[in-house]
Length: 423
Image (cartoon, rainbow, N blue to C red; front, side, top):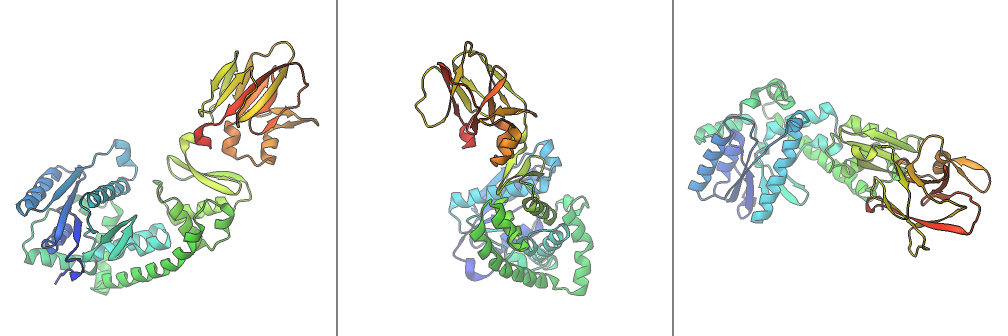
């Protein structure tokens, strides 16, 4: 028979309740505790509001605090991994309710069969070591403590309890559709495993605990190396590389499969100093010499620009940095340049780098591309750095190099202020 440990008797607990059989059984088991019911309406089925209203009335009649939220998704979000996005929004809501009521735990209705499904799914698609363990009876996400009291029981135990206690619950018909991977495991794999061992979920729980014990050893090492340093990461054993990368990228909406992690490691190990890797529709990993970062794809767009400066003043660049042209000697800590001229100083051209650009140095000329590579300027900075031209001659690359020029008595002054985002 199902039972809850006395450990949580004096705790305040937020319960995630969907009105499905698992969460309604969990609610029944915790009904005598100090609880808050948190319900999420995914707004995907016609029955959603009927279920929400039932649960609301159930809680009101028993003076149980009830909190709910209705999720709305765009068509684009529904096409791009709805399940993962819904999970993120669920936890955001649960954590808000925990904070509101100063609760001790979040109780979720994951049971033994759910554990088996999650382990097998993660093995099939590839995951980190922690991912292979799925979840534990107790865990912490961010600062929040999560408990799963039903993890010691399988679906048959829950059905038996629901029937014997005449618990009212609602079936979600989408759980019977083969559209979702989890449902296919539930229908086709789990029954076979249970024929071999009716308590197979307990074997998977032991497996999960063993994985997490091993992970603690790995994590102790990886926590000392959480940095976007290419050399530090690439000299570690792969299992530690996986954990470091998983931690660094956990806040980005990226599917971190084993294949993706291997691709990232290949990029970091590559002898090429500047590379980029597509992580998802909206994000790229950019390697720049001994470091790397994750950037929004919009940051990689390299639209050409050309600004004609025909008078003194401030000229803003596409990245929000600016060039200031003045008659006065600048008194600042920015990158400054003294431009000498003979008769006519304007116009001055400000543009980004183009193929074939050259700069005149004290000893000959050099391609701008080669100069920037020699100075180990990152590829993203190379593509956004402004170049300053006078009389069709490149005279200054701000923060990098001034061209050789003849001195005259006619001079003006240019200042380059980088955008705050670049600093």
